[in-house]
Amino acid sequence: MTREKSFIYYDGADDLLPQLREFLIGTVPALRERRGKLGTPEPLGIGIRLADLRRRSDIPRKTIADLIGCDEQWLKRLEENPTEEASFTVSRLSTIATFLNVDIAYLLLGATTSLDERMRRSRDHLKAAAREEDMSYKEYEDLWESYLQDTKAKIGFVAATRNVHVVSKEQWRNWYRRMVEKRGGLELQF
Image 1 (tube, rainbow, N blue to C red):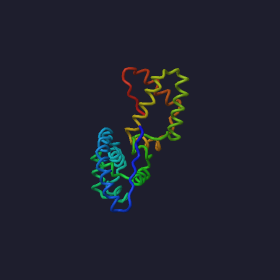
Image 2 (image 1 turned 90 degrees about the vertical axis):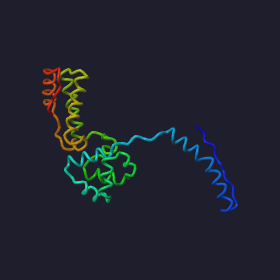
Image 3 (image 1 turned 30 degrees about the vertical axis):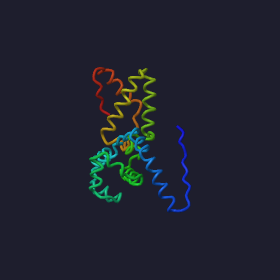
Image 4 (image 1 turned 45 degrees about the horizontal axis):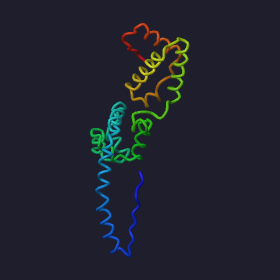
């Protein structure tokens, strides 16, 4: 889409202001229409993840508010009202992520940018066990997803990945064999 350029030629402030008003009167409705077509973006859920991590870490809201230099009531509104996240700065987000020992990507999107070393090695062990046990891809995915869901449910994915041990090939084999035995109800304890 090509935009047409507009030029305003003027001889001084007295000449510029009326021309600028006229230009804006003609442009603002088109901008409003364009914005309406774009719609309102959905909240990212930063406040929900922050509240969850704060509760799981047993950190009072006041502590985090003091840390990032904001009002405790603002933080409460952020946790309870997703539209408040529009007033969140990257600096505050980074400070909170550092304090809670999580990736900033987790606060923003609920995901991590990459697996940490222990999670990567655990997944490598699962791949090796999958080859040795001749697992189907679906079985491999079921094991990995169950493990991730269990880890996430315990303390939040990013925090959990920094606090878990490396899962050995033998442990994956044991979980796989239990899964095969149960076949109908996959409920593994990790």
